[in-house]
Length: 375
Image 1 (cartoon, helix red, strand yellow):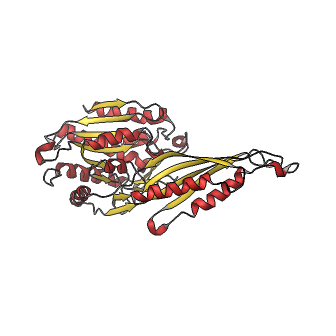
Image 2 (spheres, rainbow, N blue to C red; image 1 turned 30 degrees about the vertical axis):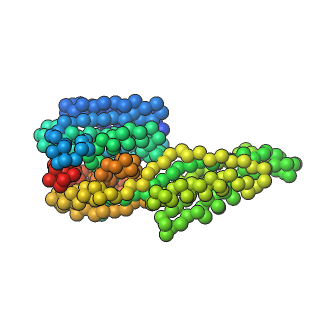
Image 3 (cartoon, rainbow, N blue to C red; image 1 turned 45 degrees about the vertical axis):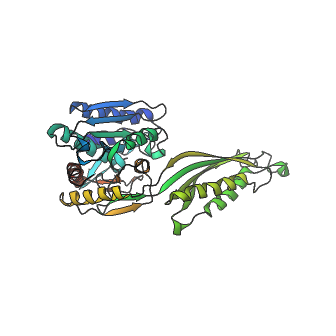
């Protein structure tokens, strides 16, 4: 598992690097095919292709549940720029491994690969297993979402192998997220010679940021962050254009439309007379909410983890993930069942190496017990 993880971490794979994400996919496919696991490639035009690995299993309807496939899910892309693995390759220090994407979520991919291989070699799965390996989660799954939702509609259960929490926790709830950009048009003018003829897009940007940030409501779990800004032509020119990019997080599905509507009103309003602005949605995640069926999956997993030497805990996360898409289409879903890690998206990201095997065993035990649990 460590050898496979080293190769994967040392392969470039930022979300916008289709060739790199597909190279990681080729590694997944080689491993699966060497284990006798069929792999289907679902081509995507802009981002990494989706891979669908399948292992045949027993009659999934024996328990009366008509959702057939047992889905193990994960994404291959990372948030890091091209060349990051060369600058900061996979390393092991003590009981931890480091490197770009080592926990989020290449270790989860490796775990899923080995769980699929174990069931392919030894049998025992209570239904068909599907390993879904997508390529654009870190930017909201703009191409992967339809594939994920289609898989979720036919799923008996979905285990998303995002990194387990440092306290061994798994995730039963997540915030939803909307990623937006607003573009502002002003008018250029010399800031000394004819200042009064200019219309500052950056001035408008500043006013809009203040208004957007004021929509944050921590008691309701709603946060707004304009995390990227750009604009202007030169220091001595009134800015003819500007852009801000917004991260909205929320808990309750109804809050999404309310806050987006308020953002639309702020973008439509001209705080600096003469400016114009447009808003676009760049990506979106749905919240992961725990249904009664998902609660049963957590109870099953918690007992399976305990028998694997893990004291798992249910956790809520402000981060978003593809698990929200499968939950929204009705699939009982549990997230963050992958190996334990922390400090994702940073140079200090780490993986607890001694969690690789126990977390794989916990997942396999949970799968083996689906029938007995009535799932």
